[in-house]
Image 1 (cartoon, rainbow, N blue to C red):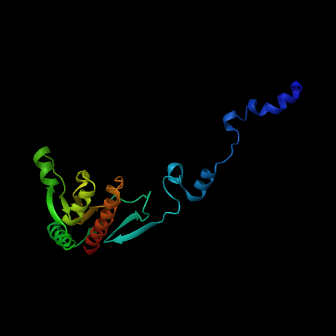
Image 2 (image 1 turned 90 degrees about the horizontal axis):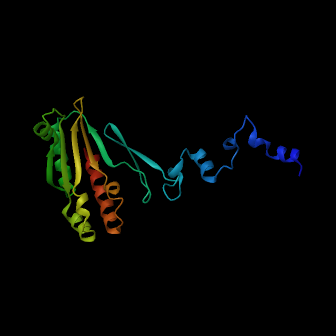
Image 3 (image 1 turned 60 degrees about the vertical axis):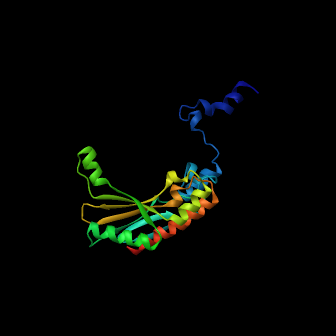
Length: 204
Protein backbone atom coordinates (compact mmCIF):
# COMPACT_ATOMS: atom_id res chain seq x y z
CA UNK A 1 0.00 0.00 0.00
CA UNK A 2 1.52 3.32 -1.08
CA UNK A 3 1.44 6.52 0.90
CA UNK A 4 -1.41 8.02 -1.17
CA UNK A 5 -3.72 5.06 -0.61
CA UNK A 6 -2.90 5.06 3.09
CA UNK A 7 -3.75 8.73 3.29
CA UNK A 8 -7.05 8.28 1.40
CA UNK A 9 -8.06 5.48 3.73
CA UNK A 10 -7.49 7.44 6.91
CA UNK A 11 -7.96 11.00 5.73
CA UNK A 12 -11.35 11.30 7.48
CA UNK A 13 -9.51 11.13 10.79
CA UNK A 14 -7.56 14.24 9.87
CA UNK A 15 -10.37 16.19 8.26
CA UNK A 16 -10.79 19.69 9.78
CA UNK A 17 -14.52 19.36 9.29
CA UNK A 18 -14.91 16.09 11.13
CA UNK A 19 -13.12 15.17 14.30
CA UNK A 20 -12.60 11.53 15.29
CA UNK A 21 -15.16 11.76 18.07
CA UNK A 22 -17.71 13.05 15.54
CA UNK A 23 -17.55 9.94 13.39
CA UNK A 24 -20.85 8.12 12.92
CA UNK A 25 -21.22 5.34 15.44
CA UNK A 26 -23.36 2.28 15.48
CA UNK A 27 -26.61 3.05 17.24
CA UNK A 28 -27.30 0.68 20.09
CA UNK A 29 -30.56 -1.22 20.35
CA UNK A 30 -31.33 0.38 23.70
CA UNK A 31 -30.74 3.87 22.27
CA UNK A 32 -33.01 3.19 19.27
CA UNK A 33 -35.64 1.95 21.67
CA UNK A 34 -35.30 5.08 23.79
CA UNK A 35 -36.01 7.23 20.73
CA UNK A 36 -39.32 5.44 20.27
CA UNK A 37 -40.38 5.40 23.90
CA UNK A 38 -38.92 8.67 25.13
CA UNK A 39 -37.00 6.86 27.86
CA UNK A 40 -33.23 7.02 28.20
CA UNK A 41 -30.50 5.60 30.39
CA UNK A 42 -31.55 3.38 33.27
CA UNK A 43 -35.19 4.20 32.61
CA UNK A 44 -34.99 2.11 29.47
CA UNK A 45 -32.95 -0.74 30.97
CA UNK A 46 -34.64 -4.11 31.21
CA UNK A 47 -33.16 -4.46 34.69
CA UNK A 48 -34.77 -1.21 35.79
CA UNK A 49 -38.09 -0.22 34.30
CA UNK A 50 -40.04 -1.90 31.52
CA UNK A 51 -41.36 0.35 28.77
CA UNK A 52 -44.51 -1.76 28.84
CA UNK A 53 -45.38 -0.41 32.28
CA UNK A 54 -48.57 1.57 32.10
CA UNK A 55 -49.12 4.53 34.36
CA UNK A 56 -52.68 4.86 35.61
CA UNK A 57 -54.18 8.19 36.55
CA UNK A 58 -56.90 8.43 39.15
CA UNK A 59 -58.90 11.47 40.11
CA UNK A 60 -59.31 11.95 43.84
CA UNK A 61 -61.16 15.10 44.83
CA UNK A 62 -59.80 17.99 42.85
CA UNK A 63 -56.40 16.55 42.09
CA UNK A 64 -54.64 13.79 40.26
CA UNK A 65 -52.57 11.03 41.79
CA UNK A 66 -50.31 9.23 39.31
CA UNK A 67 -48.92 5.85 40.16
CA UNK A 68 -47.67 2.73 38.44
CA UNK A 69 -49.45 -0.56 39.00
CA UNK A 70 -46.62 -2.90 37.96
CA UNK A 71 -45.65 -5.27 40.78
CA UNK A 72 -41.87 -5.15 40.35
CA UNK A 73 -39.38 -2.46 39.27
CA UNK A 74 -42.13 0.15 39.25
CA UNK A 75 -42.15 3.89 39.45
CA UNK A 76 -45.00 5.21 41.55
CA UNK A 77 -45.97 8.07 43.76
CA UNK A 78 -44.83 7.83 47.36
CA UNK A 79 -48.22 9.05 48.56
CA UNK A 80 -51.95 8.75 47.92
CA UNK A 81 -53.77 12.06 48.20
CA UNK A 82 -56.77 14.27 47.71
CA UNK A 83 -57.90 17.83 48.41
CA UNK A 84 -61.05 18.67 50.36
CA UNK A 85 -63.14 21.77 49.70
CA UNK A 86 -65.96 23.27 51.72
CA UNK A 87 -64.92 21.87 55.11
CA UNK A 88 -62.83 23.33 57.90
CA UNK A 89 -59.48 21.80 58.77
CA UNK A 90 -60.80 20.40 62.05
CA UNK A 91 -63.80 18.84 60.31
CA UNK A 92 -61.52 17.08 57.85
CA UNK A 93 -59.33 15.80 60.69
CA UNK A 94 -62.32 14.18 62.39
CA UNK A 95 -63.51 12.68 59.10
CA UNK A 96 -60.09 11.21 58.34
CA UNK A 97 -59.84 9.67 61.81
CA UNK A 98 -63.29 8.16 61.44
CA UNK A 99 -62.52 6.66 58.02
CA UNK A 100 -59.20 5.25 59.27
CA UNK A 101 -61.02 3.55 62.12
CA UNK A 102 -63.45 1.94 59.66
CA UNK A 103 -60.47 0.34 57.89
CA UNK A 104 -59.02 -1.01 61.14
CA UNK A 105 -56.44 1.70 61.84
CA UNK A 106 -55.64 3.14 65.21
CA UNK A 107 -53.67 6.36 65.66
CA UNK A 108 -50.87 5.74 68.18
CA UNK A 109 -49.10 9.01 67.33
CA UNK A 110 -50.19 12.50 66.38
CA UNK A 111 -47.78 15.35 65.60
CA UNK A 112 -48.91 18.95 65.23
CA UNK A 113 -46.16 20.49 63.10
CA UNK A 114 -47.61 24.00 63.36
CA UNK A 115 -47.31 23.94 67.15
CA UNK A 116 -43.91 22.23 67.07
CA UNK A 117 -42.36 24.77 64.70
CA UNK A 118 -43.78 27.64 66.73
CA UNK A 119 -42.51 26.20 70.00
CA UNK A 120 -39.07 25.08 68.83
CA UNK A 121 -38.26 27.62 66.11
CA UNK A 122 -40.64 30.48 66.85
CA UNK A 123 -41.87 30.49 63.25
CA UNK A 124 -45.41 30.65 61.92
CA UNK A 125 -46.41 27.69 59.81
CA UNK A 126 -49.60 26.50 58.17
CA UNK A 127 -51.82 23.94 59.84
CA UNK A 128 -50.00 20.63 59.34
CA UNK A 129 -50.93 17.47 61.22
CA UNK A 130 -49.24 14.07 60.98
CA UNK A 131 -51.32 11.06 62.04
CA UNK A 132 -49.43 7.82 62.64
CA UNK A 133 -51.89 5.19 61.45
CA UNK A 134 -51.41 1.55 62.46
CA UNK A 135 -53.46 -1.55 61.76
CA UNK A 136 -52.42 -3.87 64.65
CA UNK A 137 -53.31 -7.08 62.86
CA UNK A 138 -51.17 -6.39 59.81
CA UNK A 139 -48.41 -4.65 61.75
CA UNK A 140 -48.01 -7.74 63.93
CA UNK A 141 -47.89 -10.02 60.89
CA UNK A 142 -45.27 -7.86 59.17
CA UNK A 143 -43.02 -7.40 62.22
CA UNK A 144 -43.18 -11.13 62.97
CA UNK A 145 -41.82 -11.74 59.49
CA UNK A 146 -39.31 -8.86 59.40
CA UNK A 147 -38.07 -7.87 62.85
CA UNK A 148 -36.64 -4.46 61.92
CA UNK A 149 -39.68 -3.31 59.96
CA UNK A 150 -40.66 -1.02 62.81
CA UNK A 151 -38.35 1.64 61.38
CA UNK A 152 -40.97 2.11 58.65
CA UNK A 153 -43.97 2.15 60.96
CA UNK A 154 -46.55 3.53 61.50
CA UNK A 155 -48.01 4.56 58.15
CA UNK A 156 -48.27 8.35 58.23
CA UNK A 157 -51.29 10.28 57.05
CA UNK A 158 -50.86 14.05 56.81
CA UNK A 159 -53.36 16.89 56.69
CA UNK A 160 -52.33 20.41 55.73
CA UNK A 161 -54.22 23.59 55.07
CA UNK A 162 -53.44 25.31 51.78
CA UNK A 163 -53.40 29.08 51.26
CA UNK A 164 -56.86 28.96 49.65
CA UNK A 165 -58.38 27.34 52.74
CA UNK A 166 -58.66 23.87 51.24
CA UNK A 167 -57.33 20.91 53.17
CA UNK A 168 -54.96 18.49 51.51
CA UNK A 169 -54.87 14.91 52.79
CA UNK A 170 -52.08 12.50 51.87
CA UNK A 171 -51.24 8.99 53.04
CA UNK A 172 -47.97 7.17 52.55
CA UNK A 173 -47.93 4.53 49.82
CA UNK A 174 -46.62 1.43 51.66
CA UNK A 175 -45.61 -0.28 48.43
CA UNK A 176 -43.16 2.57 47.84
CA UNK A 177 -41.90 3.02 51.40
CA UNK A 178 -41.35 -0.74 51.78
CA UNK A 179 -40.12 -1.44 48.26
CA UNK A 180 -36.59 -2.17 49.52
CA UNK A 181 -37.76 -4.88 51.92
CA UNK A 182 -37.10 -8.23 50.25
CA UNK A 183 -39.79 -10.16 52.07
CA UNK A 184 -42.89 -11.62 50.44
CA UNK A 185 -44.97 -11.39 53.60
CA UNK A 186 -44.12 -7.72 54.04
CA UNK A 187 -44.96 -6.98 50.41
CA UNK A 188 -48.29 -8.75 50.81
CA UNK A 189 -49.06 -6.69 53.90
CA UNK A 190 -47.95 -3.50 52.15
CA UNK A 191 -50.36 -4.21 49.30
CA UNK A 192 -53.24 -4.75 51.72
CA UNK A 193 -52.48 -1.59 53.67
CA UNK A 194 -52.21 0.42 50.45
CA UNK A 195 -55.64 -0.84 49.42
CA UNK A 196 -57.14 0.20 52.77
CA UNK A 197 -55.53 3.62 52.70
CA UNK A 198 -56.83 4.15 49.17
CA UNK A 199 -60.34 3.46 50.44
CA UNK A 200 -59.85 6.08 53.15
CA UNK A 201 -58.67 8.67 50.63
CA UNK A 202 -61.43 7.88 48.18
CA UNK A 203 -64.11 8.17 50.87
CA UNK A 204 -63.21 11.76 51.75
